[in-house]
Amino acid sequence: MTLLPAVLVCTLVYLESWPVGQFLLGRPALLLPVLGILGGQPLAGLWLGIVLELLTLRSLPMGAALPPDPALAGVWTLLALDLDLGAAGGPPPLDGAAGEAGVALALLLAVPLCWIAPWLTEAQRRLNGRWWHPRFEAAVLAGDDRRCGRLMAATLAQTALLGAAAAAIALPALRAAATPLLPLAERLTASAPARLLPLPWLLLAVALGALWRHAGGRRGNGLLYLGAGAGAVLTLFIWGWP
Amino acid sequence: MLWRSLLIQAAWNYRGMQHLGLLFAQLPALPAEPGARRAAMGRAFGFYNAHPYLCGYLLGAAARLEPLGQGEDLARLKKAAIPPLGAAGDRLFWAGLKPLCGTVGVLALTLLAAGETAQEGKLARAVVAAALATLGYNLVHVHWRRRALRDGHRLGLGVAASIRALATHPGLARAGQALSLLAGLALPLAAGRAMAAEGGGAAAPLLFLAAGVASWQLPARAVALPLLLAALAALWML
Image (tube, rainbow over all chains, first blue to last red):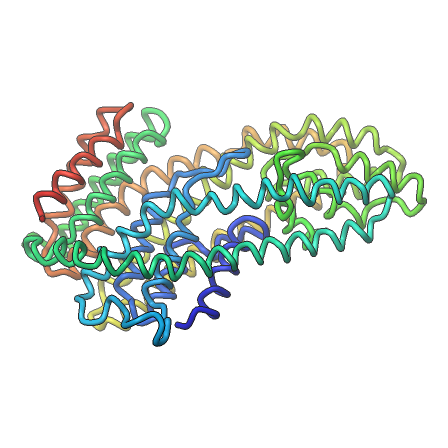
């Protein structure tokens, strides 16, 4: 994918994540497998989707809180790894690498990004307060409802521009960061016994630990244990012991 | 108003939080007379921050009360409704429905893909499973948005009782319990699904999940232990 369509997709995901609608269409478990298939990185898309979804399952945007943002982190990472920068960008860093290394690389980039991406939302919120709030206030004092409508459209356009600008900077930067990280990802996957990827399992363990804290009371914990036990039995039944 | 309510967070800021979005959504319901209109806009401009899906209760009440000249009553209702709308909405949607549908998506994604051998078929089933979970979430979410708007318009000031009743909605407890059960189920299955794709069987995911289970007994450091294990295992793998 070239930079322009990639930036467009990232901007739409950013807009849908909080300023418009919040239909959760950008949730990693849905969007990343789709983008992975479209971009020819199905394994990375599926893995990123599952791990980021579980890792941030109980991160709640309560009140003014800004929880980790798996949607933006996932889509930035996946599209950066699929980015075609033309002659100026050099050869894609994943050329020749095994699929497993691509997954490990995507996880190495995306997991920390979940905690960095909310800074964009924070910047937009501050801008809304300093720039747009006084303009709305003036329209309210004048009793001009049409100006309020125009201001809302302008706010949305500016939010989209900020999202696009952030994506236009983040995607090539992530692509550049991927090149030196690829050998590490290859070492992680190549030397793992039975071609295991350590990162996903460990992240799932982190998710489990985090879920425990939120299960809520004896009954919630009991159900979590019950589900995990049933899941383990089903896992053995479906995929078997090696 | 329903469409405008989708933009309730569009101009979120630290001065009045969602107040600009609420003002924008309320514009069609404001009185036509210029003086009354300016006063109503001033009231709508006041601080507002609650769950974005539940703003319909106040928007519907505004559509009923502002034309009747009961704007001051509406302002008092808004002030009183912010805490229960925020608390109940966060529990119903963010802490209940969203993780529940996310977990259902991951579960369906792993189980549906298990019976398929071709890579393309597995991926197609995975996408269908995730799309169904998202659709389920949005059917409930949009239904609730419409219901809130309708109740607000129908009941006017009486909507306060509906808002109070949200805090004891039976869906809160049910969603939490269903989430606990399904989340426990989804984790080993997701791990097993991915491990099967690597040809390694169920041993490694169960091993790592055991580490997660062990960390349950350390409430304050529940996340720290798996992270430490992660670092050690990554070093060992190198």
